[in-house]
Amino acid sequence: MIKTAIVGATGYTGSELVRLLYNHPDVEIQMITSESRKGEPFSAVHPHFEGLVDHVLQPASAVLEAELDMVFLALPHGVSMDYVKGYQSAKFNVVDLSGDFRLSSPEVYEAWYKKDHTHPKGFEDAVYGLPELHSAAIEKSSLVANPGCYPTSAILGLAPLIDAGWVDPAHVIVDSKSGITGAGIKAKPTTHYSNVSDNFKAYGLKSHRHTVEIQEQLSGLRPEPLQVQFTPHLLPVDRGILSTIYTTPIREEVSDQALRKLYEDFYADAPFVRLRKTPPTLKDVRSSNFCDIFTTYDERTNRIITLAAIDNLVKGAAGQAMQNMNLQFGLPETRGFVSLPLNP
Picture 1: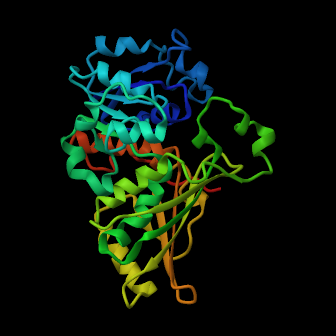
Picture 2 (picture 1 turned 180 degrees about the vertical axis):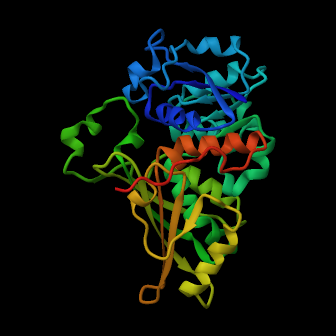
Picture 3 (picture 1 turned 135 degrees about the vertical axis):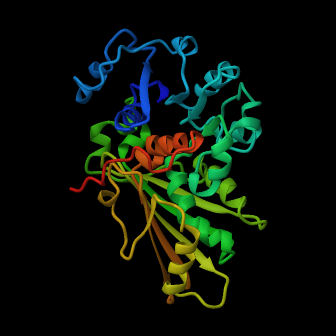
């Protein structure tokens, strides 16, 4: 059994990790931590776990005193880095669900996150945890930087086109919409019911931190300079991300059939990427680890339109983290994923 701990499990992604790991046949949840609720049962924080997961919440310092194989950090950006630094000598693997080690250097991190980075060495050790692109490196790594939810949908939607050199790398537009859980569990004015219900808005124009994450990962596929225009939007729904991606082809012949084959070949060994014949919806992937992709060519505008849908809490966070754990411990990527998408 893989002995695991979840650090910071009072948020949405921590709760989702517990839900997924609970059903994993090779995992034992040994410890769940919370600084603000320590001493209380986990089910007191998340009542839907009543009678199923009643672990008493521990302080995070207890992690170093336990015999563990795997630790998930479900902590905010700017907090995880100190924990990773403190775990350098530990024997367990780490999957960090924050953005603290997703980028190429501490300098890039500080420029986009507007925070000082306290553990630059972590960038040397961390592997970007998108299994569809980096499975071999993830298998050998003890520190995985779990991707952001928006970047997961955008990168998976674009990777085949960028890798094949089919589109103009200077004109890539990613228009993404996310459910409210993507903003985290802590209340803030923008996530109040009165601001979200019956409303729809864009945010982070021109400077959202996920822009550079998308750009860096896709730039690793081709030598040409890449420029991404990324605009996120907040939907009045609980969970899910739908990204609509616009690219301009630079090859002479493009068709729906050719696009289908390109994506089928690229994702032939990707069990969680489903290529759809019709545009996907949020409920097609709800509570699952799937990324559903649809792509088509518009002859009138000479643009390729690609849609990618994920559940931001699963493939966009906790599910991808468990998928990365499976790779680290030599298990099939699909091990432990027992639930089908929930619709309606």
